[in-house]
Length: 99
Image 1 (cartoon, rainbow, N blue to C red):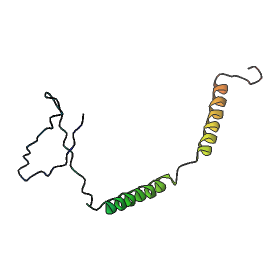
Image 2: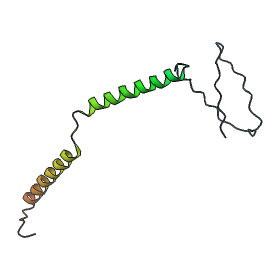
Image 3: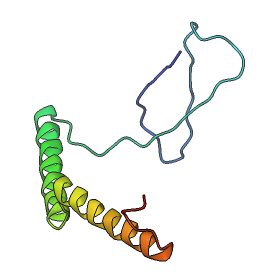
Image 4: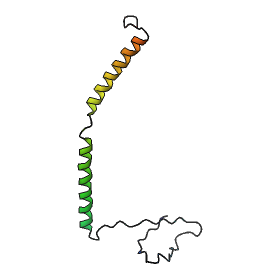
């Protein structure tokens, strides 16, 4: 069972907490999380989140500019595998005709 309530913390940082009767007595865990400083207006909050999302997308596009495509990565891995196989054959004197 979870009970969540937003409260104002006074300057002296003392809170008096009343627990609903539905909660059993005994041990409990209290978690204090600072409330984000979003605007009170829901439309402003939505546009703020959208602006942050757009900024994050643009940042990711910039990061991903130099990254290879999956086809290029697969081609490079195949080339590496061919080079490793050739090196293995040279080291152990294996001819493809004998295998």
